[in-house]
Length: 219
Length: 217
Image (cartoon, rainbow over all chains, first blue to last red; front, side, top):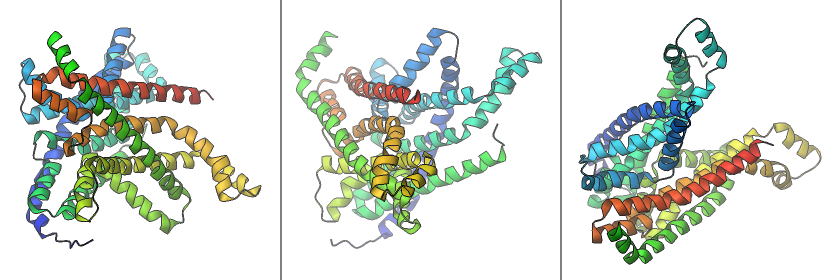
């Protein structure tokens, strides 16, 4: 084993790695924001009285959770244009990650919905709130608070999955790291720094979420 | 559709080989990952505090790093350290290390969920630590960790598709090669997606069934 560590080559391109990290975070935020909408809708569908809605939600979760994200990403980027839908690489990646996260978030929000105590729903109905008002002012706030921890975990997972954007040449952290790796052959240093950045980002997000959770009492 | 079926027939063997490699890689990764995870999980619960530290670091590093980064690192790093691993071996290594951390955490959670009174009772009747583990703790922990363990299998099959990026000829890379020849992008990506879906849904169903069975106890 004859390998001397030289981090200089990696530090020289450190700004690229940081901008890659920012792109990854941006992709994850955009995708999870859309995914939350999908997830909430699909979660309400999954507890609906209508069998059709439950089935649609169930199939969505089943199909997306059991298909590799990379296949979805490649399908959205390379295959959709031949069906007449032309998205640029950012749009197509955000769309596929949103669709992917929506399936995981369905289960998160579903658990959140089921965690809302029946008593407060009945109380809301008893004081004369309509069903929509109950959902909006009583169920939704309690659910959102209760899902915060698993929502955070899903976000961290999706941020890590944003590395797959490297497959369609989006210059995020993994893509930049691979470029530095190939350009400089400082293999060990590059991947140590890249992985360190991911870990630091994940732990920071987790730390911030924990603080957020503490600010709001659990229902 | 006929054109697709004709192309599928031409490409049947490469795709089938790729499918088998996908399964083989995933099985190898879950077997190795389970071995690593067993050591990690038991150490995280029972090792003295200082000896626990390397396992904690291992789990945190593996769980804080994207699988793709692990795969790329496992592909590039061994060569400069004088180890020569094939792309497939590097991929299995990365997936196994990833799975090892996850399974270790699963097992830790399951072991800690067992009431401490049981371990104390086992010690009190004179069981040695290996006996305690084999006859009291592991049977219960394994039962608890089984459904999420199967879920890890699904994650591994999905993760194995990332090996296409380091040139391992598994299902996704074979699919891409076929698409490169006939340009039937949608058809073949959907076909590959369905193949993954099929295997994973079978695993998922087994997992859910086991979960339901165990839940009624």
